[in-house]
Image (cartoon, rainbow, N blue to C red; front, side, top):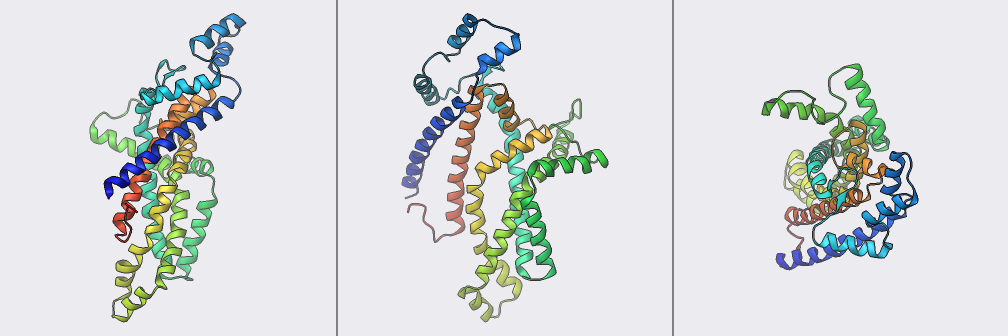
Length: 324
């Protein structure tokens, strides 16, 4: 049953990835200009013959349908092409930057989930109280605050004013060399970007967890648990919280794409050397091969994690069969 489910999901994922690749190609090639225009602008001047030669060299002189077919053929061979700007394979560039983005995403989502569950439970345990009102107000404030503004404010307060945390990069240039010292240095650089990216999603999880718990509190099995003489804490943590956390798992899978999008803003603000800053540079340099490679690899990452979330959901709720 599980094998058939995985086989079906893999087939669906392949179709989705092909459609994503075609969409990325179409949207990116609708933008004016290309890498040849950038190279001509940097050189100061170039005649039409030189521009035509460059476009032939990069394969940009062919019709768009032919370029798309060549692009899909290369993807089928796991070839993402060559970066015009960096003069190296796109795959190597992405692999080099991917760990930084994964570290930022994992830290932010872990912090958001943990904070969302803790504060959501705290608010739902005493609805209408001062604690509930305070948590709900702070969650609404965090939800409505733009990521770039929150990041800039953290830099101003914690880095510029107090000097507690570094404001740029992933490591201190010429900094410590020991494993423990390097790890601590990376963690110090990670705190502000992770908190900035986590704020919006934590606010979402707090509100969802609170609403889900209040709904579960009104169900029959909770009233039965109370009638059996279980304490308030036993009812909350043995029955209500496990059943209330399932919607968070579903939302977690849905939001992965937006987390990647948010990480672009956060990485640019903090100079974090991940896929976000790489995509930002590729866009302004018209390095379309690199940009499409980043978008495609990001899509693969989202599809894989969504599949894992589905399996986790079925594990958390045994009533759900993944084979259905």
